[in-house]
Length: 269
Image (cartoon, rainbow, N blue to C red; front, top):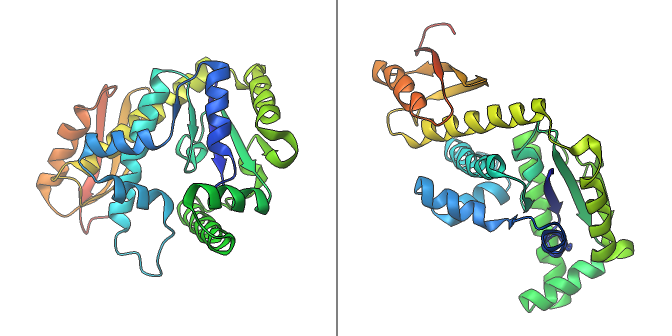
């Protein structure tokens, strides 16, 4: 069975759809749990991880490296879940965090403004004007974040396999559509898609390990993985950093060989 990711604007009904699908399909349903698990595993506060996922960049983003590290932690945990089996993920751009995996169904949920305002008023105890302002602010943050990280427009339908308008379908109708999609041959796991997932999982775990080790966290690395063979490229200021790469990467589950192509700062790559 395929993995399902649900992207939605705030108060668009994506959470309700995810929970309904979880009951229908018997899938685990995860969202905030990924952030909590990443925080516990890598020793980062939930607030910092949430900000990395939801807040758009400032004009001068002095914390870009921290943001990149936090995203590596979150992606590593999400890939760990993907390794373990099927699930439904609703939240921040899960389809981008699992990019390149063919047995992921990328769902986008939309709803009319009145539906969203009504939901925000009820859940946040806001006035209509406050709710509308809040929705616009959150949507704009996510729009900037997606453009900044992935160079794509958040609302662009080409980023998804299906866009569902809950105003007409309702939760039940939208659920029926997605259930049908899970039955299609196009979304079933294959040898190639499982291999792609394993390569992605190892790459994200390596990136998280490098980000989390004090000997390597300040260097810039590019990581490639092919069937357990991990190639690390980049520059480092200290020889100790270059030597630490093989130790840090070699300890990651799924790594069978490390090709260390990190060079001292100042030398050509």
